[in-house]
Structure formats: structure tokens, C-alpha cells
Length: 187
Image (cartoon, rainbow, N blue to C red; front, side, top):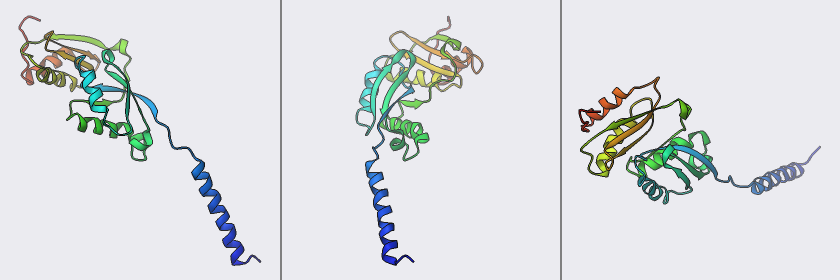
């Protein structure tokens, strides 16, 4: 028959072994994740994105591809997701939106292959500053089926890559008009 001291001793050995195992585990290392970034409507916004991400704890902006509106970030998904890696993208989007006053956002990459998207270009007028371009961009980017958009007050144009099964050019024009963006009669 085992004595209480022997049982307690065995329990302590198991507890110490478990503690030693836990202490030997390496902390999770940040990994790189590619996301679609909303708010990259003109090239100079890449620098704005860098400024927004720089102070975020435990997040590093690795690279940005303006043409595809995609960026690679390095972070620990479990830590960023509050212990739930599957929530990391959602939490990251909230962090970026709060830090940028909702001018940037993070979304998953498009499921539609780029070659199956249709480019749409719409001439606009009256965009005389970055804020006006942001209004035009957001009007178009929020339309279901728009996978990527840009707006340039310098060029007087809004562009979008759309999934033709979900939306059409007319929907983009309508969204711009609702946002009070001027569209010249001749397109």
C-alpha cells in the first residue's frame, strides 16, 4: 500500500515534469499573412498605410502591392486573435480600422481569380482632393462584387475590378451618383 507521502511525491514529480515541458515550449513565432487592403485607392496611400501599421503592437508590414491592393503582414495569429487564430483577421481589421479612423480595412483575399474579374473605368469630375477621392473610392468599393477599386483626383477617374456575376458598371455609376460624385455626360 502506498503512503500519502509517496502519492504526494509522485504527484509532485508529474507536476514538475509538466512544468518543465511547458517551459521548454517555444513561444509562437509571427508568421506572414497576405490580406486584401481596402483604402489603397491611390499610390500615396501606401505610405499612409505604413504610418497606420507602424505603431500597432506585434504587427509588421512586410510588403505592399498597390496594383493588387494586397499586403503581407507578419504577426502571431493566436496572439492577435486573443487566443483564437481563426479570429485574427477580424481582430486585425478592427485594429487597422480604429488606427486609421476607418480609412483602411483588412479583408481576406478574393476567391475569384484575377483573370475572371472585369476592369471598369469611370470618368469623374469634381474630385479636387484626397478626401473627395476617398468618398468616390468608398462608394465604389462597398458595392457587392467589387474586388478592388482606385480613385484618382489627379486623373479624374475611378477604376474597379468587378465580378461580373455579382455587379455591373451601372451599379458603380449609381453608387457614385448617390455619393454626389459628378460624372460627365460623355463616358
